Image (tube, rainbow, N blue to C red; front, side, top):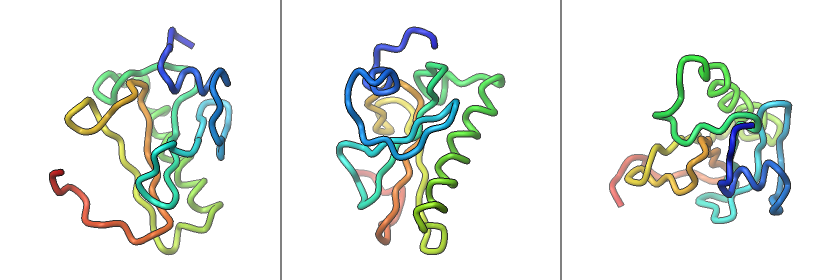
Length: 119
């Protein structure tokens, strides 16, 4: 892994605790500590540090896709595929990104409000 001293890097290295709900060779999924829905899981790449979606390059396409596939697998495993779930990637501060290690949010477990209204 490239140098990654972010909160997520520390979670990946198990230096700080997290409730891990998904893991494979490339992706780690853990519960958000400030959930925005009854189920709020973050999916992060384990072996590559990409600060933002804007920093992703063509060679990262498969990895970004694996984040989405991991979220879908988790949603199916937990039974959210019928009622639905939301996946979101924030890019930089105005979009709400607070940890600069690319990650995908999965939100589920309740009917979610309209998406995209300004705060």
